Length: 88
Image 1 (cartoon, rainbow, N blue to C red):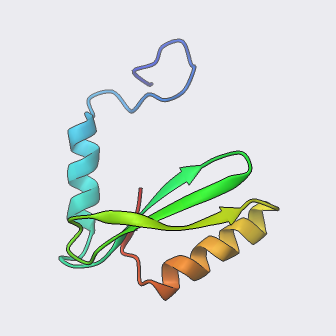
Image 2: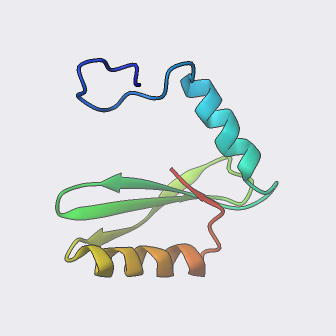
């Protein structure tokens, strides 16, 4: 069951708060390592990357969307090359 009883999406499991999600994500990360932020648009995927201490993020690239498998391959190649520890 979700906090969104109308079924419109965007809810989280009952009993979980935004802080719980963030705490679990933070606990799963190594002490140092960049985090990527994705902006998923219909035509492009914007990617921002943080520094290793995760104190600041800057725009890295924009991936023009084509097919899901090609988009995923481009994103995974970028994340691997930059040794990204997590994605938000």
